Image (tube, rainbow, N blue to C red; front, side, top):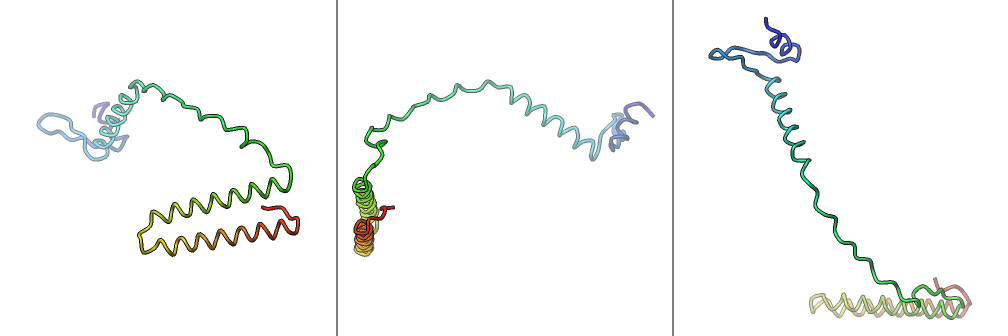
Length: 131
C-alpha cells in the first residue's frame, strides 16, 4: 500500500483503480471540491476595493432650532406649533387616500387637533408644563 493510499484512508477517503488511475470517492471527492471552492473564494477576495463614497454633510441647523424655550409661554407656543404641524402632516396624508376615505380622515385629523389644543389650553390654565 502506498503512502498516498494510507493518507487517503486515514482521512476517510477510499481509492480504487479505474482504468489504471487512482480515483477518490465519497468524502474524498467532497473534500477536494471544498478545497477548490475555498481557493476560488480566496482568489476573489483579493480584488481591489472600490473608492469610498463621498460624504455629504448636512446643512447646519438654524440657530432658532437650538434655542431652548425658557418661559412657560414659549414652551406652550412651541407645543402649539408642533400640534399644528402634526395636523398639517395628517391632512397631507389624507390627500393621498382615495376620495371616499378623505372625509373620514380629515374629520379624524380635525378631532385630534381640537383634542390636543384643548389639552394644551387646560394645561396652560393650571400652569402645568405642556408636555
